Amino acid sequence: MQHPTPPIRHLVLVLGDQLDLNASALQDFEPEHDVVWMAEVMQESTHVPSSKQRTALFLSAMRHFAQALRAQGWTVHYTELDDADNTGTLAGELTRAIAHWQPRALCMTAPGDWRVLQAIQATAKAQQKPLMLHDDLSFFTTVRDFAAHAKGRKQLRMEYWYREQRQRFGVLMDGGKPVGGQWNFDADNRESFGKQGPQNLPAPQRFAPDATTQEVLALVSRVLPKAPGQLDDFAWPVTRTQALQALDDFITHRLPLFGQYEDAMWAGEPWLYHSQLSVCLNLKLLSAQEVVQAAEQAWTRGHAPLPAVEGFVRQILGWREYVRGMYWTQMPRYLDLNALNAQEALPEFFWTGETDMACLRDALKQTLRHGYAHHIQRLMVLGLYGLLRGVHPQQMHSWFLSVYVDAVEWVELPNTLGMSQFGDAGLMASKPYVATGKYIQRMSNHCQGCKFDPAQSVGPQACPYTTLYWDFLRRHQASLAKNPRMAMQLKNLNRLSAETLENIAQQAQAHRQND
Image (cartoon, rainbow, N blue to C red; front, side, top):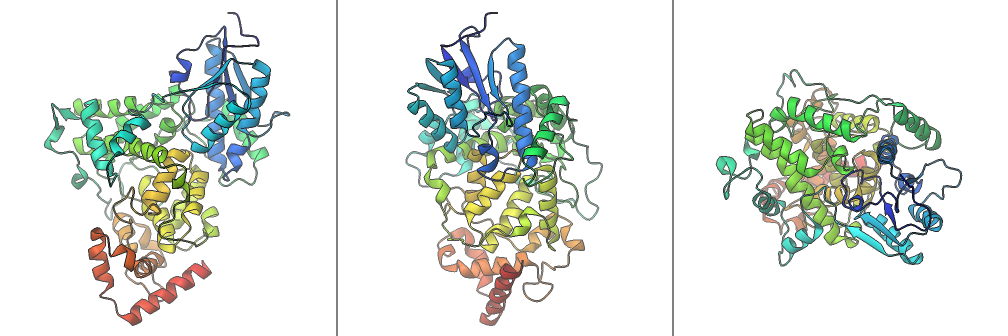
């Protein structure tokens, strides 16, 4: 096969979260006239302090993808992180590649990150090259679909969007009605493990690092020694083949009990019945369509119950597509929202896991070890603590984007700033997700060995979650009173005496100062 020489037709840009051989930008690829551009740059690991696991995952998956493209006979212009002449930025590397290849045009699948899109558009303009953006076909919907849905609506609730997509794509439908006669099976899900704990948990499929991944692990350790997290347990899927194996493993071994225990936690058990497929989905090693199809087929053949399948499908077809639409229709203003005027700094122990709060310690240590926590740990342990303490939502956003291997801004920012921290004043969530330590006690075993008592709000044994919960309601009572969904919680607040509230306020402030 004849390889292209400058000047070429298209320089096709592939980012680290676009590793799909069927991506729209690659469908018109002509090996004789086009070149794929990929670049590892330090900026993507340092604009937030990306964890070692996160950086390693992206770089390993990118290198494996480049190998797959070259195996097809395609020319790939690939810059590695430690190349001597690497400029360290996407803009710098793209400028160098344009100068070398002299393409007539740049072509890419639309990026998932607003910041990255701005940088690429600015570079294309500076180099006077047309930039052709193609829809990302790994999603069910487009941002245009969501914008049309949102037009004229005062509230953008996920449930209505989700039902529309179920009908549009015929997922779990019986004619015009949902299978099972209802859209939502939450009432059948969300059990705790009880005192006995999880029984016979299936071991998750982990993927031993091959030679390429081992090179990346050594590189990350060498050039990013102070990045958070560690690499000792790295075993994420980094290829299309491994992603398909991970999907099959989840469907076979964990989907049947996923719904029942999707909100449960247990100390020292990071994986439970969760899919761990967000990595594969967000890097585009899997498409949303094939994941939903696999889950639906599991129900059709009687392998998994409808509540489990519906709960999982809602996360992919509903929540994930909704969050993406919310991000792109609200950026860039969304990034700076802080409706509750939260101004506290992120506690230093979020980077170490060193805290006496058992639930928080478990979630933080697990996060720093694996680059992973399941959605209830993120929302109702880590996020809840930040919200109750009053941490600045942009600091919470930066931390979540830094530490999780599946974190890409389009999905992380709305989940953190909106759903978790209520920084958007309810654009996403109908109310702040706040609770005392009793919620964590009910859904886990963390409180059994903890020095704090979730039933107490003041005193040396008071659970900081409980103390901060009442203080949160006290501090935001005036604004929360306008929300009918907060009526019961505020009614309980009003039962507390002025003296009790003052003691709670003092203990909350002491906690912020000392922890």
